Each structure stands twice: as C-alpha cells, then as structure tokens.
Image (cartoon, rainbow, N blue to C red; front, side):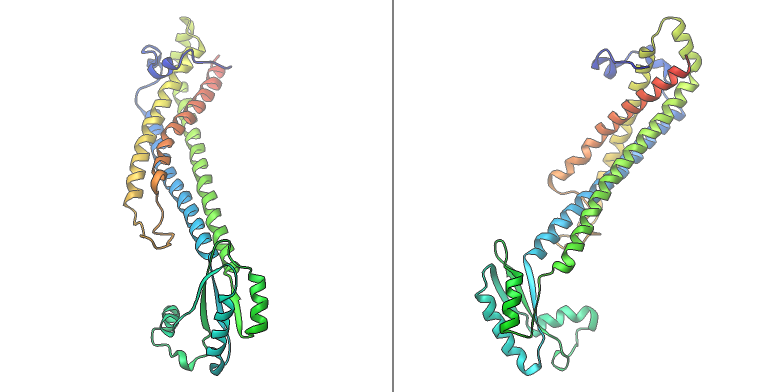
Length: 301
C-alpha cells in the first residue's frame, strides 16, 4: 500500500482529528525525542571529526610537501666542507626557495625530547641537517639526489615522502570514517523511529479499526502518524544539535598547533554544516514512519 500527502500544508499543520490517533505522550514520544536528540548530538561530533580530519590532512600535505631535509653524514673534519658544498648545490637548483643549515642549538632542541637538553653534539656522530623550502611546483628530487651523490657524497636527501603519504592517508581515512559514522547514526534514527511508529500503531489498533469503519482512508490515518513522528524527530534533533555545538565549542582549540586531539571542531562556514542535521533527521523520520505506517496498516487490514 502506498499513500500520498495531498498538500505540504497538510503535513505541516495536520488535522486536529487525525492527530488524536497518535498518542501525544508516552513511551513512543519519549523514545522518538530521546533517540533523535542523542543521535543528532553524536552526529555533530562525527561531523566535527570528519571536518577536522580533512583540515589535518590538508595541513600535513601542504606543509610537508613544501619542505625537505638533507643530512650530511660525514666525518667531523669534513662535515663543514660538505655542508657548504651542499648549500652551493641547492643555490643552483631550480624550485628551491631557500636552504639553510641548522645550528647546533636548533639540532639540540630537536633531539632534546629523546636525549635531553644536555646532549653533547660535539662528542656524538650527529649529522648536520639542512632545511630546504620549496618554491612553486617544487624541485626535482631525483635530479637533486644525483647531483648530491656526485658532488657531496655524504649528503642524503629526505623529501618526507616516505612518512608524509601514510599520515595524509590516515587523516583522509578518518574523514571518511566520520562521514560513515554520521550515515550510521541517521540509519539508527530511522530504525528507532520505525520501531516507535510500529509500537504506536499497534497500541492504537482499535482506534484505527474504528476510523476505518467511519470511512477514514489509510492515507488519512498514516498522515497523522507521519506528521507527529516527523515533528518529534525535528524537535529532538534540534535540541541535540544545539547541545552538541555547545559541547564542541567548549573543546580546546589547540591554537595554530597541528594537533589532532585539540583540533576537533568547526571553523568558518563549517559551523553551518550541523544545522542541516535536524532537517535530515526529519526527512529520515518521515520516510521511516511512512514505511512503517504502510506496512502496519496493511497488516491491520
């Protein structure tokens, strides 16, 4: 059995007599409101996770793609000479904006989290690092490696490609996971609304039978259920979205640091994305209730 709403106004305003078919309170109302609100709250965090993962992947990709490092692995008495030779090669390499050798203090700061701040660099075979910043489309890494192999045997180029790609891929998968979680949450809303609608129809089976005896059509009866459960889902999800947005807003932002755990949230127009959730939940509830009402009324025939 299928039915159609005669007008959109009928769905929005409803019929005061048909509305009495659906209990205004009780288990089904509480279940629909709670389920839609809780699922919308979780969906806000799923969207925040997805958008934050996308920003993180873009940040990692852009920052790491524009930088590279050269390690000068040479004896202590040759390290300064080979560092100067590597810098001369970089000065004549197209696609490199600037290159500089890190000082002892900078290298010591990089190693401090693992070896402490009092690491004696002079007594350890720590390679000299050269930082490279690309310009435009970047440089030819293969050609630069060949030049360094010929002119600076102790230089090893690292364009960060070995560990940049897994990080970006992981962030992109987290973004997909966030959207998948949001889709599963909407599916859970549909399941909950379907169960609540079935329970309401079963509880009002005698009322439905009387309405049929006085000439009410199944479309008229189903419209009452669809309208009531759609509005319940809209109200519950709206409350859940508001609470979710407040909770996300209270999370630590992390500032400009590329931290994932402190960077979950919305930025700019991203704050408008969760506002679509109540409408989506209402549409899902409408479709779920229409399907449930169609099957239930057919079984009550």
